[in-house]
Image 1 (cartoon, rainbow, N blue to C red):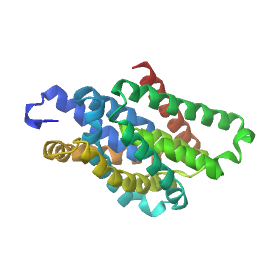
Image 2 (cartoon, helix red, strand yellow):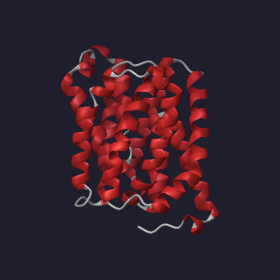
Image 3 (cartoon, one colour):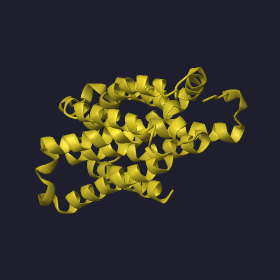
Image 4 (cartoon, helix red, strand yellow):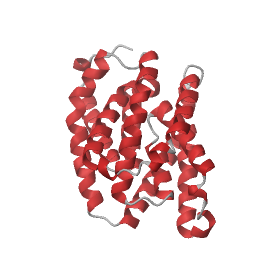
Length: 251
């Protein structure tokens, strides 16, 4: 893919700046906001090509979040989810050459919406799901889904966020755990995206220009998270994830 950042219009740069800001918000814990950057980059560059453009920006956001909140990470849920996530990444990587881009978003939308509905059910009928989130099979299912959605569209934030809510992590542990998990996972995805020709010099130049927007979004999102209670934080994650899932289905 050829990309010349100097040929982008002011309107396009404005959209990309909003998307970078959205990545920062996402990395502060509001994972459902990932819909913003997924849709904008897919609109500007196409669903498949956008995954390679966004990936280094996500790594930058993960690194910033790790430096701010990484000390609060609960490594049990990094280690538990990482092996199945890698299975999902490999499966999606194999699918990317044969699967039409038109199936990416509705597939991910169904996954996210289903998980959001399950989490809503847990909030109102907690007894139904008391033990399920802590089962080994649940972590494997969620991990594979995280791997598939992150490789196909860099849209695994809502999936992993719903998992962390299901197991009951507090806000700071939530952000710190997600930061380390996605930093490691996204770094491992680099060779796959490079092999597919989705990352190159021009895309990296675009990433560098948009870095300040990511940092500003992370700071703004962290300030919001600090001012709301745990239950409101969880409700925001679920609502934003559900909106992301519905919108992807309607595209």
